[in-house]
Each structure stands twice: as structure tokens, then as C-alpha cells.
Image (cartoon, rainbow, N blue to C red; front, top):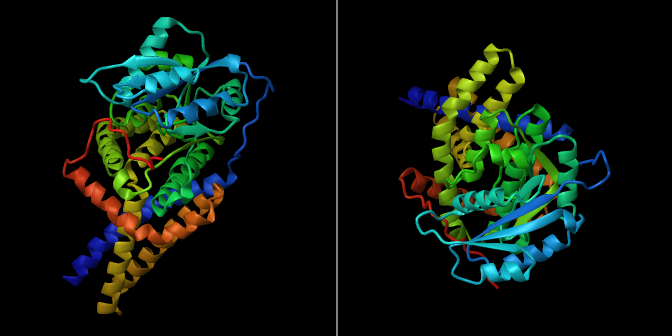
Length: 410
């Protein structure tokens, strides 16, 4: 019986080791990738439409609009469009007061960010407003002053879809916010940077996304809960690659408690699982076909997209890895002379060490403040909470609607 348990544990650890090894591959690749954007022409020429989907965002929207007026880019070359979706507050009026073009949408049957963007994009296409690229920002965000200048430079060198570094504002607000900052440091910075070095696609993160005009004319925006992930899959299967602009930063507010994040995380994980089930088979078929045609770059692009679906949330991966190490340690004490137990203990230790290297290098890359490192002491609490969220999702209790996320209201 003990031997069977050890074999099962070792098989689980082999899977965990494979996932961790891939994260370490991206970590090493990120070391060599440039983190600066150069504008080959030195001139700003592209006209941008900035789209802001908003649901009852009267408190935070003014700060974003003020921020956008302060960009280091000619104001004649960008316009801001806010879609006030099913709002019951003054979001639309505040958008107009802030110099944006407000679009009011009321549709109780089709609620959500995806539907709002889909509707706004159709209106803009019908209006034929001239533009070279479209930017999508969340209403609770601010962007770095160089945001459009960086994107203009990347468009000038032929990039068609670009993702900015999507970070967390005020990470010292609470330990929960600090841990979200740490999670996004690796998910939104280290991984995309590594993917750029290896030829993968950075992925779309839902905020700080830029598209050349024809992309959104050729492909309809998804209206699903995780519309950004689904649209990314559409692009990858169509042969497009999302590029990463690490020096263009968009920061968003996050709930300062785990309770405030509950609905948001549940919605995200539910959507992630649905998209994975729908797209992994097509991605694997595409990768196999590319290998047969000896298009190895294309094969890696599709394989990497599969890995992004397969790798679970880092808190869940860390929790499972820690549990496997504790189990291996217990079994080793029960049977210290068992070679299988020793192998399991060594492998479990290497997995945990690899994940520590991964998270700390990600924090180093983004120059994380000291508070974030201190908040890692609360990681066990966060891991238990995240596992609870995932269990709820697996039991079918995820929330699919667009509910305004609770924030630290002033």
C-alpha cells in the first residue's frame, strides 16, 4: 500500500515538475529579453481611439480621464470613448465633463464588458471615425505618460497587437493587494517577457490592450466572461501574435480584501476553464499540423498557448507543490530506507525551490516595493483562499455576470 501511494505521489510530482520547469524556462528567457521600446521614426504619427468600458464608475473614471489628458502624445492624435453600460449612476455625464465621448448602453439581456465593447466597436465602425489603432482600458486604471508613445513606436515597426504591462496600483494598501501585485508581476510581466524571447504570444490581459484597426474589423470581439482570453485564442489560431510592451504600464485598483476579490476571481476562473475546454483541442491540432509542415515557430506559438491554459493559477500550483513535499517528507520518515521515497522528497524540494526562484525573479524584474516581499508571509492564507475559490468554480458556483468589483471606496 505504501508503495502504491509513493508511485501516485511521484506521478503527481512529475506533472508539477513539468509545469514548474516550463515556468523556469520562461524565467530564463525573460533574462535576455530587452525591456525598452525604440521608435524607429522618432515621430508620433498613429491616431488612437481609446475605449473605456464602464459600469457604475463615477468615482474612478475622472482620474483616468485626467490621466489621459496628460499623456506624452499629441492630443490631436487620440480620442477617448466611454461606453456607460447599464449604469445607474452619473458615469456618462462624468465622461462628457472629462472630455470623453460618452455612449450610453442599456441592455439587461446582454450585460458585461464583452457585450459593451462589442456594441461600441460596431458603433465606431459604422461612424467611420479615422484611426490607426484602438486601445482598451478599464475605467479604474491609469497609464504611464509614455503609453501611447511606446505603442506608436511598436506600431511603426510592424506590431499589430500589443499588450502593456498590467500592474496593481498602491500595492502597499494591504497584504491582499500586495499579493495580487506579486501574482501579476509574474503573470503579466515575467511570462510575457519570456514568451517574447521564445517566439510565443504575450496574451491579452483585458486592460492596456492595443490593436491595429484592421484586426478588430477582421475578428469580432468576444462577449464571453473572459473575452480577452477568448479573443487571444482567436488571434493565435488565425496566425497573429500578441507582442508585449513592458515599458508601457497600466495600473488598476484592486480590492483591498480577499472577500472583495471573491466574485471577480470566481468569474475569471470559471471563464478560464470554459475557454480551455473549448480551445485546447484546436490548439493541439494546429500544433501537430505545423510540426508536420516543419513550421516549428508556429508549432511553438500554439503549444505555448496550450501551456498557458494547462498551468493552473500560481497559488494553486504552489499549494499542490507544498502539499506534495509535505507528503513526501512524511512518507520518508515512515520508510527512510525506501529509494522511491527519497526520490520523491528530492523532486518535491526541487519543485518548491524552482517556484521560489520564479516568483522572486518576477518581483525583481518589476522592482517590487518592500511591502510586497513582506506580504509573502501571508501567502499560505492566500493559497487556501484561492483553492477555495477554485473548488467553488469546479462545483459550478461561479458568477458569470458583470458585477462591479468591490474596491477601497473613499
